[in-house]
Length: 256
Ligand code: SF4
Ligand code: SF4
Ligand code: SF4
Image (cartoon, rainbow, N blue to C red; front, side, top):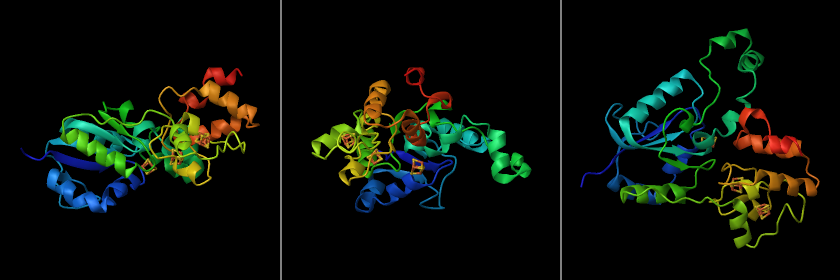
């Protein structure tokens, strides 16, 4: 059976997810035995930029016309498109300011000459093209990337966590930073899969994996408020990795 042809791409991002892939040192040789890696510029300049691909992994966000054109070309080349990292999945840090006045931001930062730059309000991949698999994390977790490869090689879509960080935190029997210390820990509404890395080290979760499925924001805000954490503090934290649509808290939050 021929090996699946694979490409790995970075749009506007920090390359952290691609580096996580390259840091799979013990598994890299096994990976190249199973995959035909055709286009991965961060790893090699010897690449085929136009061949059809079975699987394309894409990191980063669409933040310019150039990003958008590249993403559409990648989508047209591949059967399965995997969004790699929180930026690609839900906008992440680059989307923090997407509902602000873009012209003003650019002029504030670069002066009037900034208007010449090719810059668009940031979008996650699924807002531009169809996405088949989403692996979140900032950066991604190595074990989730490898599990994804194994599933795709078997012709399946990977099963990734949908539960919140709190689930893993409780399993590790950590002291709860929110309940016991009144810290703004976003574990209750953040997607698990990181084995509650931060709370296990005594640091509250900042939500780097994006929102958990069916996260109950209203209930979470109520608990945060009961512990003396005002809405604007929670909002700022939430905005870091998972922009609230229209730059506002959901109406239910505003009305509280
Ligand atoms: S998700 Fe994090 S690691 Fe990945 S590109 Fe965005 S900022 Fe970098
Ligand atoms: S410390 Fe944070 S992640 Fe852990 S149980 Fe408490 S709220 Fe959840
Ligand atoms: S605990 Fe929260 S901030 Fe830390 S790695 Fe997990 S999701 Fe990210």
